[in-house]
Length: 117
Image 1: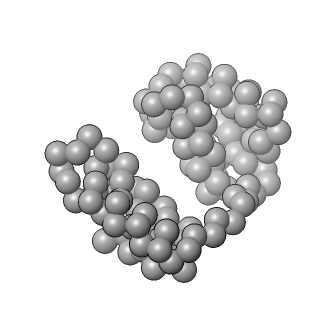
Image 2: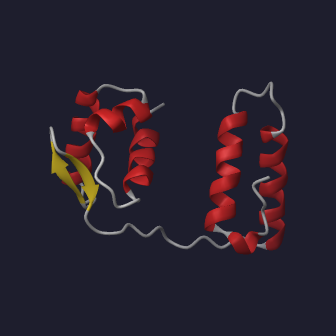
């Protein structure tokens, strides 16, 4: 997993409003606690409202709102079809990612009519 994806995933975990230890986050990301410490410092320095410190844990102090995404009905249908094809192919190396993405899109864009199955 590259750093950008890890930072995105960390923000998604922290969006629940709870305190998370570096050890918990490291285990979830498959990296060392030292990497989490560096990632948290970098996120705080770039303006993401993450607070905490080593030994205590980290939390987002303000909600992060993602910009709205508008899809046409055809775009939503194509996206759903493509993700379902990959999600249903157990041999595909990104089956798990397609399944989680289907869930995220169904949650974030319910108007798209994409069911996570």
